[in-house]
Image (cartoon, rainbow, N blue to C red; front, side):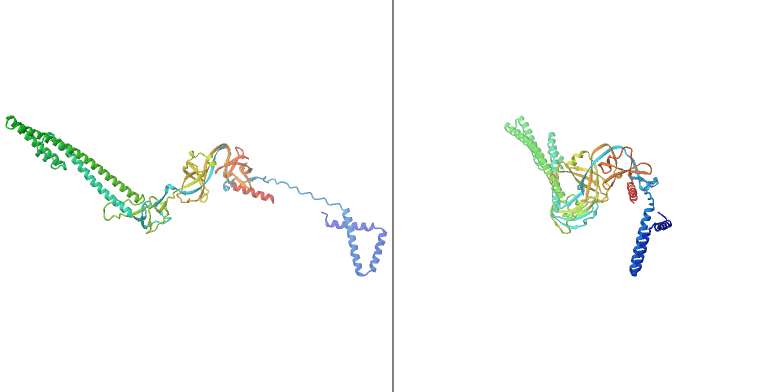
Length: 527
């Protein structure tokens, strides 16, 4: 720039030079123009004067521009990098801020990567802990003490029913038990009678007198065999005594031989009759004993059958009160009790409802555990070995983003025709009651294992605008962004195919702070 004083002096000098250089012809022309202007009216003179001044200024300005050397142009400003500027993609973070940012580092080394298969599923009731109590016979609901959603304890009364079928079943038990007692008495009698008959027959080998026989078996039951056997034995003794007397008389010649022979014949007939009676009695008592044993067994079976029928009518969830003929017993009454600690899931009946056999009464569920029902399609099934899977990882997004360990309960033996999938059921603890049947779930099934791969924790990966990168620590306070190409991903780790090398110190936690610092640095550079 040229100073203002110097410019004004230079213009005045140039004006003097221009005046001196003007020729006489030009001066005469100027004088004539002046006279001419003076002779014109006043307004015309002003216009001519203004035009002349403008012309002079233009001429003077052109001469000044041509004679004045141009001012040297100011050199263009060249951006000089600041000596402390941070290169692009680098974040400076002093060590004192590492704890605040949660920075964690991990040295990258080749390792094995357990691949998984993610399969969708649904939370469902644990069917091993669901009970739907149904009416076992036609009945009437007398009262109910549990509503839907109530938590009930084991043994707590739920419903009181009245069933005539149950009353008749209890009466049948009483009747059959009475028949069993009678059959037992008959068997005991026949068994004792058989023993006494055997003893009586054996005693005759000693040839006791009738008086001894009567005295010995006076208090022992013999039934009808007492009369038959003792009478036959008495006739035998009489025949033997008569034969002995005639034998002596026959020797002395006092009686005829014919009479003696008749007496001997009578003795033999009496002996044969006695043997027949004893044999028949022993057979009869044995047969009666077997018959009574059979009757006793049948009576016992009838009692068992009637009790089983009563148990079936009462069901496993009602009071099994003892059956007796006490007048205080309500034979038709049934009290349904909770089999375990549970929650009432449904109760379709109310007091005074008439319920038919097999109609639902109440449904109880135990929510301490739930099932996750999943389906494995053919491509998933081929990638996993279900025979070796005992536990898996389950995630219910509606509840938490933290996976939980579930136990595999069973898998189907075949492929369903409609879905062409294999059913898998896993059991998940649910003591907090957070998981509800019907919720969507993911399950992670372990698949093949890749070895000698470079993998970083999933938290080390930064995803931004379609790009993926990590931060590598170059020093204690400098971190460098490194773009990476990802491979297979698991819930915990991600394979790095390109961008990193073994030995790199990768930031596994605190990447959000580094990313924020990187973005702020980029915005400052743009400004």
